[in-house]
Length: 480
Ligand code: AMP
Image (cartoon, rainbow, N blue to C red; front, side):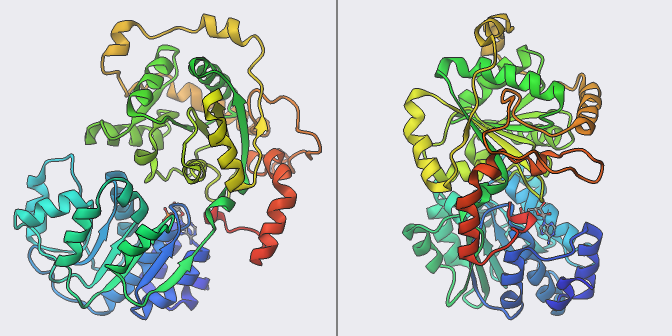
């Protein structure tokens, strides 16, 4: 019997969780589910990766199933708003999985795809609708959707909604929802303006907060290389070639500050024979989906993303995150590196810090309490850089092919071999930092990157103290 049973969730939901292999609730699930089952409003401070989708989905599905109702044409009983298409698709996928043994339908609507199919599908009505705000309002204006029957409303990633300028659409949507409803409001951060926005949706909420942001970095081995801006591309290409070939890196996310910068990085990587794809707001929905699918399936090992596009990405196996440019908002760094070291695995974050980014680095260190290990430039960097193939002027101007599938299986074979060989570590940090212990051996007798010590060791004192203050022991896998 799992702890989920004790939470009082219906049997078909428990069966779906078993099928997914979830044994224990994550901290946010433990805290949120009982209150939500009682019908309380909820204010959740949590980010993607904590298990918050299940935290709001499971009790909602339980309540909807406990009170079955026929579908109302053009209506829905539960509305989930998400800032990005990718996150909306991911939430809907998860909900379909959790509702597998229930007679509840899940639909998704977001922009960037033709509206016609969405309108006809909504005609029959749905139990659960996951939507981005812009397309939702479009559909309401076209009289393809009414919100009069919403019983449960979830606003996810509120801070990102604000970043994306969704405040007006949200205010309009708030006015269209029935007064009598259950509301859930989630945000990774809770500055005053977000709290004010929350007040428009929730009343007398239960407040749930998990893993203060600065602690999510604990399981990630963090490195920084001080490098000129103009040398970053060569450094990335060289590190990725080495890391992918050795298997130290299986799949990685590269963060750039701009959409244009993401495209440029991809073009250079492809010119150097590294399969890569970009994901950002200027890409069509088809390109974004193709890039993500290729990345998830392991065909494309490198995904280059801007912060906003990357928010919804949940790929359990990301072994490294490269900060090609450091974010100017330190919380964003924690979001980024939270993409690796998920589901109990270890991971590595490598930041490239140019002279004018040093203040960003200082702010990040202050927030996380972790000083990344300095990784030097690779030996013979300049000679290696000079030998790298560059994209032609035509390639740089043209839309690149993002669907380069050649060589995937060879790469996977190399990675499998490397996995059996030993621990994952920064390709250019040859020696363990002073005082670091070797990683412990796993059942196969090989040291695994998950337990790679460098950053953990370096964090040790401070993080242990922080944990102790929180009364926490081992952080839950999904918190990482
Ligand atoms: P989320 O924060 O909702 O994006 O979830 C992060 C990841 O954790 C997803 O891949 C979920 O499938 C997974 N997950 C959520 N709850 C659990 C759980 N109780 N046990 C194991 N994995 C979980």
